[in-house]
Image 1: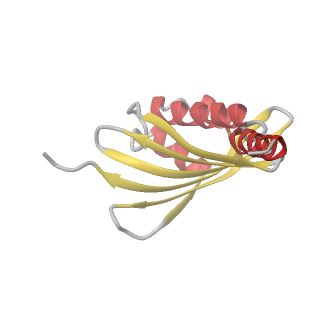
Image 2: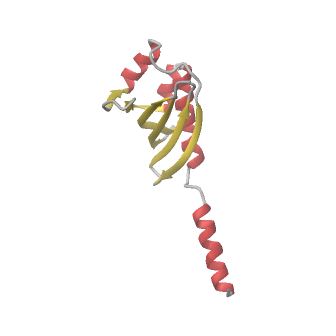
Length: 141
């Protein structure tokens, strides 16, 4: 292999391996949002998300449902959502500087949440603007 070819191969490898700009900040924002939902911490959830946020989900093969952040907060306060710590696995993050998206798997003892989050970069940092989730119940023993 010539020196130029080796250099091009190395440059391509480094470019492909470089994380998206702001990836760490975006992933921290998603983790904060998920932790707030798990803990039913409404104040932290509101800090981590946009007031205009929408949550769309499909549970157990049913029809998609979309609710507002206010509706989700009400479910958290009523104990009908959240309250269980989930493990978080980041599968992929993309950003164009102002907007970001993250594919995440969240796992609780009762279900797996396959989620696509959309985020917006604000003066205060990244906030979740959308949560699109497919809920898969855990297999019964």
